[in-house]
Length: 159
Image (tube, rainbow, N blue to C red):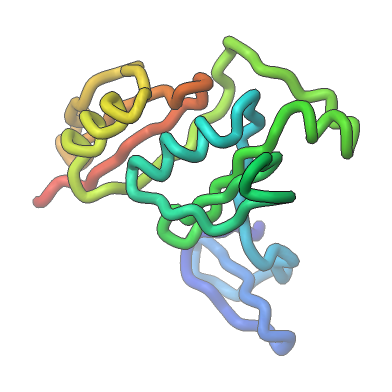
């Protein structure tokens, strides 16, 4: 069983395979990185929301005046905003805007309450206001970005 959690062991190829139990890896990972992408009607509006939460813009394509893709950096993980029209025109993906939430991006933050308020000021809407987990180890909240993409804010509690 290979997973992205646990202790890593480096193979002769320089790639790292991971196991939860810390034992020797069974297989090597062919994944060199990861990115989360959201399909948007208005990529600029989606990107501005995440930028307001402190994630800098790192990529725009094909041009800044008419972007079809924008990426921001979220502590080393890129979050991309892809134009629904461009995704269907270029790659025929068949994507569409939806009212149904089936995924979220989870962001580990230093202060859930402060970032939750900032998200609301930036045009987000509340799904669940900040609350503590039943065991008290976490504080979390959920917001929706301006096009309904769900964002979970998580904070480890001292203790």
